[in-house]
Every structure is written in structure tokens, then in C-alpha cells.
Length: 264
Image 1 (cartoon, rainbow, N blue to C red):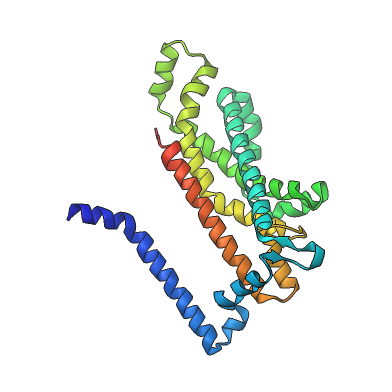
Image 2: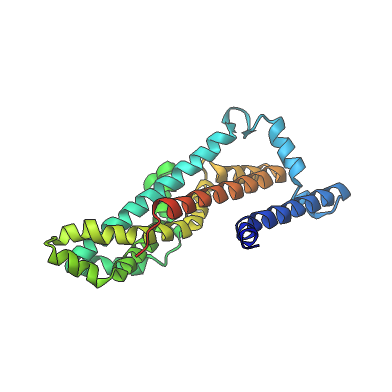
């Protein structure tokens, strides 16, 4: 009985989640068959999926059409580049603040003033500076994640037990060695968990950046559907965005649980 209970605890959420999602799709399809009004705005999966299959999984018009895998890879590349830069930047900033009181006095005011600014608010400035390019999308993701990660990094540093630092100091470790061999390993799991929880914000930021004129990416698919008054393309883009975001979140969860598994 105990083994069965443990097995259900592990598989139950997936089973019930799959069943509820399947029920939603069945009801959605049934509504489309009966011609309910809302299905003209939100066509069921059988309609927008067949549309994409008929087009050979290409989105766009004429020479500007791009394949679906190119759109997905473009968005993934932008969001991962921005998140990686923000992760590295947060650790570097935390190092500077942790090693120097002068860095703390100089940097901290900027962190707490700029952190509340939504990443979308940076889009006009980014377009003026970088133009409509990949750099703009990466910059928006970076600004949407960096400040939260940096503040979280400082909180994780303060959580490191004082006895760890005392013991390492008694063993002759320098200030830099204590950071590299004690503090950094102690804070990595917590900072990565914070990165995962802020992935949704980064995901939304890159999609919005792609909607302001970029020719590829998942956000561009939504804007293309809007410009063409093609609700099927919009629904397909939303589905791909949702599934892609879910898969990335699962990958980040795996890394956090299996690779950065230790916690102080």
C-alpha cells in the first residue's frame, strides 16, 4: 500500500493534468463542431494545426516566410542569451559587493532604483540604441532578470552560515578564496532557483520585444497573425509559446534538482 501511495504521489499529478488538458481540448473541439461564436475568435486545435500542416510548417508570406523551428530557435537563443548574461552579471555584481564595502555603497542605490522598472519600459530606449535586432531582445531579457537576480544573490550571500566563513578563515583562506570555495558554491543553487522562477518574466519580455517589428521568433508569429487577421495563426502561436515555455521550465527544474541539488 505504501509503495502504491508513493507511486500515485509521483504519477498522479501528471495523470490528472493530462486528463484535464485532454478534456479541455475535447470540449473545445465540440464547441467548434457546434459552431459556437467564440470559436471564430479562438478556433479549435484541429483547425489551426491543419492550417500549419498545410503550409509545410512555415509561417509568413512569400519570401519572408520562415520555418517553425527557426522561429523557436530564434526565441530560445534570445531568451537563453539574456538569462545567461543576467545570471553571470548577478554573480559578478554580488562578488563585487561581497568583497568591497565601497562597491556596496556605489552599486546598491542603482539596484533598488532600477529593479522596479518593468522590462517592457526599456523597449523604446533599446530600439533607439540598438535598433530592431537580436541585441534589443537580449537586452530586454537581461534587464528583466538581472536586477531581481542580483538582489536575490545578495540575500543568498547573507544566508551563508557565519561558521563556514570562520572555519575557512581559520584554515588560512583568503577573502577571495572564501568567495570562490565557500560562498559561491553555497549561493549557486538558490540563485539558480530564482533564475528559474523569473524565467516566465524573461519569456514574456522576449516575446514582447519580438512583437515590436522583428521578422522571426514566436512573438513575431502572434503579430503576423494579428496583422493578417488570422486567428488560427494567433492560436497556433500561443500554443507553441505555452508548450515551449513549459518544456524550458522542466529543463531548468531538472538542472536545479539533479545538478545543483545541494542547499545550505
